[in-house]
Amino acid sequence: MRKVLGLVLILVLVAASQIYAQEAKKGVKFSAEAGLEGGAGVVGINALLPFSPRKDVGLKVKAGYGLGNNYNVMLVKGIGVFNLTEPMFIEGSLEYVNYSTKVTGILGRADAEKGGSFGVGVALGRDFGKLVGKVGYSTALGVVALAEYNF
Image (tube, rainbow, N blue to C red):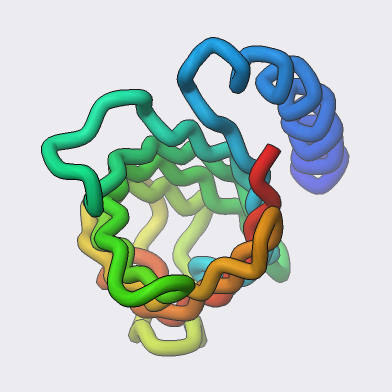
């Protein structure tokens, strides 16, 4: 049942991403993201906010859902994007993560207890135009590897 619910949520996120792409013209820029977080395959939607403390710093929020082996993970992140030399950047994040059950064997993290926890993360990314690749580490999710598509 959880996997069916997860697949439905993934389809909703994909459909919502098309709607959000229309909104990007109003100042907020949206992107879809997929990859590995918390030992699970994760999909998410990012919103790059139209305001920033500096020209070379961006602020994003992310909501995501992942399916692992007999568990799921939901996550919400606040992300600061710090531009290095083009096309490289660093992201720092504050995260809330909720695991559906106790999970062992997460790459880069010991065990994750059932329920919610907070964490911090850092990732190095490279911009390839509309596509972005990122690798990093999170105290709540372990090793992170993501691909992002900018609308």
